[in-house]
Each structure stands twice: as C-alpha cells, then as structure tokens.
Amino acid sequence: MTKLWNKGFEPDKMIEEFTVGADRQLDLQLARYDVEGSMAHIRMLESIGLLTAEELEVLLAALADIAASIERGEFVIEEGVEDVHSQVETLLTRRLGDIGKKIHSGRSRNDQVLVDLKLFMRDRMRMLAERVDMLFRRLQSLSEQYADVLMPGYTHLQVAMPSSFGLWFGAYAEALVDDVEMVAAAYRIANQNPLGSAAGYGSSFPLNRTMTTRLLGFKTLNYNVVAAQMSRGKTERAAAYAIASVASTLGRFAMDVCIFMCQNFGFVSFPDSLTTGSSIMPHKKNPDVFEIMRGKCNRLQAVPNEISLLTANLPLGYNRDLQLLKDIIFPATNDICECLDMCDYMLQHIRIRTDIIEDEKYDYLFTVEDVNRLALSGVPFREAYREIGMRVQRGEYTPTREVHHTHEGSIGNLCNDRIAEKMHRAMELFGE
Ligand code: ARG
Figure 1: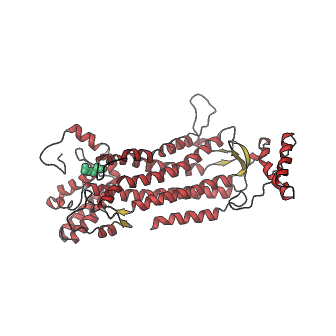
Figure 2: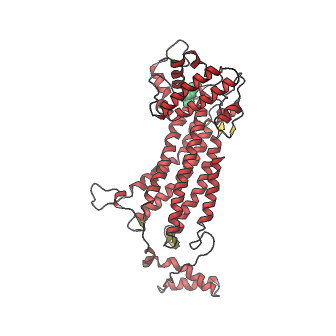
Figure 3: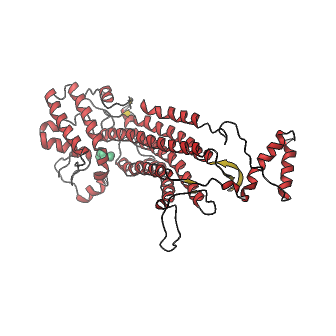
C-alpha cells in the first residue's frame, strides 16, 4: 500500500518492516486518542477557514464512526499501513476522497503522535493513581484491623523492637502517598497540549492552539514548538519515574510477604488456592505471586534508565528513535497496574498470625521497653540500659511484654486518619 508520504517510489519491504517495528500493534492503544486529536484539529481548522462547515460535519461523522469501531475493538492497522495516524487518514480518504485529504493541514505526524501520547499518558497516570489509592485503602483498613497485633521489628534482619501489623500495613500505605505525588507530577507534565507544533517548528497556518487546548481538556500548552517536540521522551520519562516509584514500594512489600510466608517466620499465610505447588515436593505452597510481583517491580525500576539511554544526547527535533519509547513505556504502564490489582486481590485473603510475640525467641524485643520503664521510674537512662543489659548477659532477662507507645506514628497512635488526609490531597491533584 502506498504511504502518506508517497512521492512516486515504493520503499524496500525490509526497510519498511524494520522501521515500522511494533507500531501496528502498539498504536492500537493510541487509536481513540488519535481520533480525539483529529476531531479537535479539524474543528480548529474550520474556525480559521481551512475547512468549510459542511466539510467539518462530514469529517466529524466519519471520525465518529472510526471512534465507534475502535470502541467495538474492530479497528485494525492494515498490512502496509505504517501507523495509527496513517490508518485513520487512509480510512477517511477512502470514504470521503479529497475532503479526507484536507485533514492534515497544519500538522505533522510528529505532533499527532505527541498529542496521542499526552492524552494516553494523562489517562494512564490517572488510572495508576486510582489503582494505588485502592491498594492504599486496603492497606489502611488492614492496619486498623490488626492495629493491636504485635510482630517483631528488625534491624540488620535481627530481632530489634516490637512492631505491629498496624505499623507494617500502615507503613506501606503512607509510602504510597509519596508515590502518588510522583504520579501526579507525571500527570501534570502530560497534561499540556503539544498540538500545533507540527513537525517541531510550528506552521505558517494561523493555528488556534488555545482552541485545541480547550477542546482536548488540557490544562495548558507546551507553548514553544521546539519545547513541545522535546516533551516527547520527557513525558515518558516522568511517567517512568512515577511507575518506578510505585514499583519500589510494591516490590519491597512483596519481598516482606515472601519472607513472612517462610516457615522460619510464619507471620502471614494465604488460602491454598492462592499459593502454587512444586512438581516434586508434595508439601509445597509457594508465594509465586509475590515473587513474580517482586521481579516485575524490580524490572520496572529499570524503565527510567532504559528511557534515559534511549534518549540520551538525541539531537534537537524529531528523531525516529523516539518511536521506540512506546515499546518501553506501554508495557510498563500495564505491568504496574496488574501488580497493584494482584496485590489488592491477595490482601483480601491474607491471614495474620496473632500470637507471634509469645514465642520466646522474641523475648529480647522488649529490652528497650524495660530500659525505658526503669528510666521513667527515675533511673538515669544509661544505668537502666546497663541494668537490663546485664540481665540479658546473665540469662536472667524476662520481658514484661507490655508496649506503651503513644507518640504520633507509633504502635499505639498510628495516625492513619491523617495519612488518609495526605492521600486525599494528593489525589485531588488529578482533578486539576
Ligand atoms: N510512528 C512514529 C513515531 O512514533 C510516528 C511519527 C513518524 N514521523 C516521522 N517523521 N517519521 O514516532
């Protein structure tokens, strides 16, 4: 099939396959945004006299049909068509002839793909934040439910001081608030209109970029046309940092669960149906879900690096390398959401051991409590420390097993409501 840019020669088949790469599949995810962008663009073209009102109506109707076919899952990028932008224009031209050929005035596929990506990334970042918020709520409710169940706290992976399931679940909830701030930053960076930058240097048509900004619901414009083109890669990079940030929290939680499921700990368990077996060891109930989650989250933390390397030192303006960003960032946005969903699903079924602390191997968790108790009764801290230390050393230490923590954020005063307020404020950034 001939190209949009056909100038009387057919390109080499091998060259075409190599340069198109995965676009025919990946661009399907951009299709609805491409149509949305085109609708805004032609409304604007009509407003500046480059299309008649009748032409606009005909084009909008045809684009609405394409949008419906995308919605139904019937839209395909045909063999020999390079990308979604070419496919939409091909469909319009096939149906409307010359009118279809008018739609591309004042734009380039460079700003077309940019606007598609901004709209896509804006949606994905909002979706990601909603998923994070869902897991946040789950963790907070578990934190409240098990606020009084103690567990060992570790430093150096050695038994250290009392902790609780309230603290553990609540800690990951609060860490997710910072991650949402990162997602919100990526959302705001995506929420700017690049349309009208054309190939990267603007157009001699009197485009009304403010109008397309309003039609597409962008908060503002990438004003400078060169900066707009530069935002390709920067938008993805910001999203990648946000995804990596969520992944670092989630991956760490997955690691905790793997350890806590281990028989040597035995702090948490899941129903058999949520564990996996071994082909040789009949007793096995493995935490594969959390291992896959840990692995995926580790990989996702490499995504910002991949993007940095792909875009490092590219000359200013459009370069075809940028197409490969889609191969990196599209699967990443899916993977992180899948991990969040899975974590939430698993946590609906988590079982907590409530008598962990009775085990005598955790006796020493309480030494600091006992030192502090002595100190509060008037013994200077260093002497109290020595006194309890000597009891431990002589094998005479018996813990009182009482925990009195009252300050903000401690076992006895989790402040989950104030953490929820922080999350609420972070989520509000997506309404702007
Ligand atoms: N598939 C291309 C991309 O993602 C679309 C833009 C093509 N532009 C060009 N000048 N070849 O970058």
